[in-house]
Amino acid sequence: MESKRVAAERAVEFVTDGMIVGLGTGSTAFWAIRKIGQRVKEGLKIQAIATSTASEKLARELGIPLLSFAEIDTIDVTIDGADEVDSNWNLTKGGGGALLREKIVASVSKELIIIVDESKIVEELGSFPLPVEIIPFGYEMTLKQLHKLGAEPLLRKTDDQIYKTDNGNFIADCHFGKIANPEELHQALNLIPGVVDNGLFVKLATHVIVGHKDGSVRELSPS
Ligand code: 5RP
Image (cartoon, rainbow, N blue to C red):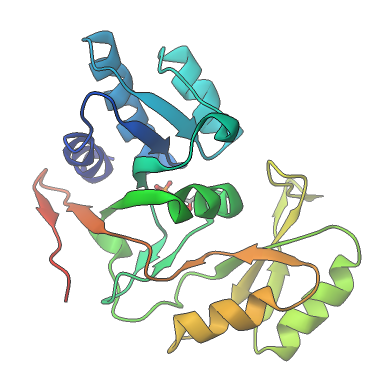
């Protein structure tokens, strides 16, 4: 928890008056939203756009002014977590189920600051099963197509009920083994009818901030 909090708080130092800020989702992004809320109370003037109903609710509770996509053309900075970060800063995201909204927000952000604890840094993606958002119609067939692509897809469930995203879709958690070429896999997945998007974020991160258990923080340099 400490490692997530320190990484998140370092990232919030990038936020300055007048910015439009993307708010990520998950237990690390939670700390960033809390810190932004604190700074807004102290007078920081920003407007934000959230990547999930949970983050939107938290932002409202903290008094962070929120915008809709109709009101903006671009986002200055987005702060979000990740499930894995590889040596080229490709990411696996969606452990918290918000990958689609997160990707929409990330793709229109000038800066995407990824905040993680040290356990998320890997050489190659693939230990964490890749979340793939699929539409409910024909989902059994979409799972078969994912299998044909080399995955062991597992339909995400909570308490025996099929998990539903904020968009009303399902998530297939896909074990592919090591992902040697994230860009190629990303494209192949998104060509399957029934797949809405997948949790591979390729060449989107502009900063990676890593928190450690001892409370130290390090910003990675691009390789
Ligand atoms: C949610 C995400 C999260 O950023 C990711 O799962 C990391 O979560 P946490 O910060 O709780 O470890 O992609 O869809």
